[in-house]
Image (cartoon, rainbow, N blue to C red; front, side):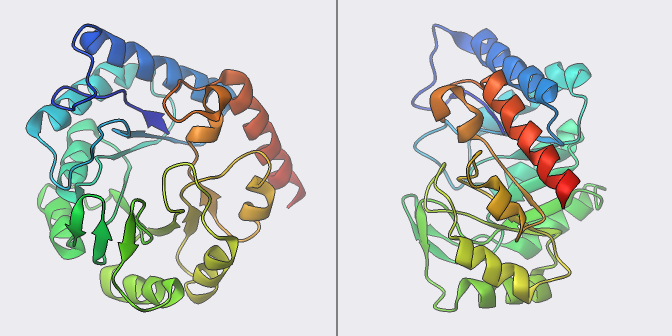
Length: 254
């Protein structure tokens, strides 16, 4: 993850530091992650708290501008995620030529932001209407900061999502950013959708990655690669290198 600092329009945006601070922060994180040897990066507006279900135009335009400005330094595949807005996420992916997106595309949730009920059909049709059927859509089926109002098990929801909403990958998360998903839930999901990639979406770290990779096709990692494991700090190059060294060892011995 390349986490943007708070963007213009967000309550935590620092007007004194301005746009240059935002750019310098994401540039530093991108370079360090690439030096560590990550497979891909994903840009997200993690610090735009309180989160919105429909973001303002300043959020989208600033992210698009910043990623575009950084484009000649991006050497790995990249994706985007505009929390928590599927349509804006698709729009950002198209404007920046991203390869994949992550969002809550299905389900109904009681959340910190109110009732949350996205529309996967609308998002996918919007993607297609913009001429980017190739953008891979990663569905997070266990929303952070929320409780699913669907009474089915997460495995049942995963199986149904794959049938009805054709995701390119299914993601399983913990309750909030940085908290691990339950290993048993990841196993259950992987078992019922063997033909669809399953990724652990939160809480992956140096200590649990080997166990998690035994039952997933990959992981998305942010907080534990930061300075002192703090979500709101920049990427720690040494932590990122240690993590990727371990991942390469796991792959070699698999």
